[in-house]
Length: 139
Image 1 (cartoon, rainbow, N blue to C red):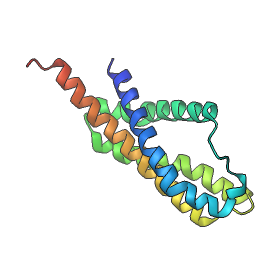
Image 2: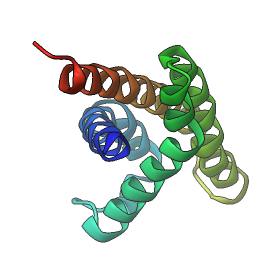
Image 3: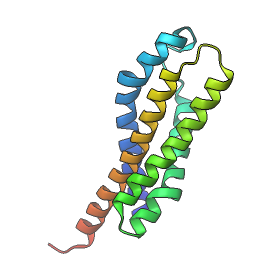
Image 4: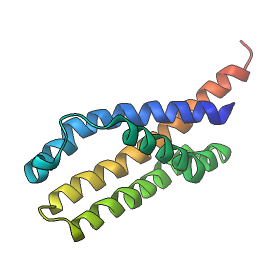
């Protein structure tokens, strides 16, 4: 049950924060360089697949171990590392092979992915601990 709670909380945090970050930070920078390639609205299917899979991986590699060890700061650090690696893989590969890709796009998206993933992992662990404690602690 705790894993389900952790997954749901982490998905909600990740989606909520990313909606803000994509619209306020990432998209404006991408529009400057590759605006002609961007859709007006995103494709729900691929987006849902990414979010579900990425958060599942985040739980497997970061959040579950941190929750088990009662170490939310471990979730923050390891989540940030995973975010840097994942977003960096996409961005540096794109910079290497795509015309009009800029270092500014790389910097903004990698920084955002690092913060987003770390904060989502940390928040998921903290809130899951709080909810789990509230559910088993008699009033």
